[in-house]
Image 1 (cartoon, rainbow, N blue to C red):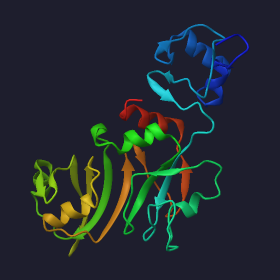
Image 2: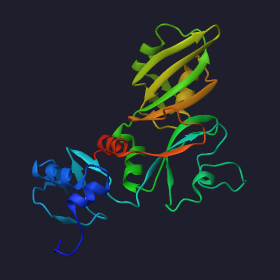
Image 3: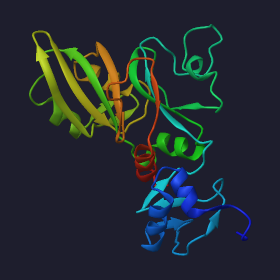
Length: 244
């Protein structure tokens, strides 16, 4: 860009929360900053934050101030839609007054609680939902107990559902009391009701289901119905797993 156009790279990095301007200049000197795939070492380089793609230490940095990604703990009974003609509670109700035009990344059925991402980053959303990127999702499911010892091995090997085979990335028994068990299921499938259908197929119908993580973004201790903006490490992690 010309001398008077754009924003100095070190200022962009500082505004994105990477480091102070002085520390950002050091990052540039050390060759740790890339702009549009090219290492930048010159100080004072100007870029357009609306179009430039910036990586620091190989991790993409979200530098556009108008782009945001939010973690929502979707409550039980809420629809994963931005509007509902019947007036039922939906995700759109929670973000209607925000300045950004957000949309949900994938869906959770009304009876499933937990982590749902909302964003106005179209390319990130597209890749997170596309099956070719194998984005892992982690669920906690309450099922009837006891859980047979070889169930995890069976699910990792794969089972055949009516719409094709499915297998989990990992399966873990978290806790058990008489007649009830809590299990963790990790898989990268995105088919409708896949966790419920999978567990019911092997004899463990789901009594309650919560999605607790997408990639390395975790629900943590968020209350149902609460939202938080992802920090730059979380956004960078999402970019990394989908190759952005």
